[in-house]
Image 1 (cartoon, one colour):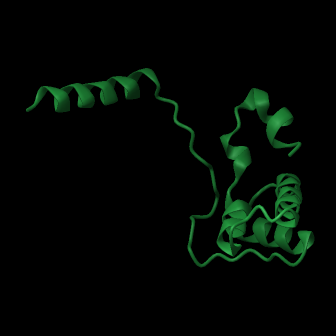
Image 2 (cartoon, rainbow, N blue to C red):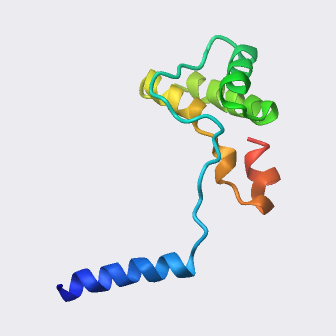
Length: 106
């Protein structure tokens, strides 16, 4: 075994032991490429996401509002980017102490 391979592997194992907490999204339903959230209205999107993914309606409303703002400013390169934005539960990547300030308020 080469020294470089050994050192890189050892560093990875050590990092896993020292930093066991890894950010993972807790999405109730598994991801699927054929998921297509409605983009016609806020209510339709929230209803779809609650039924199909079990997400919090309050957080979905904030996500929809951000989506509408970004779409109005032409910030999405194409429809796939908008779909990815709607399907990404950003609130799952917030620390508990930052949740109200950064995630729930948009």
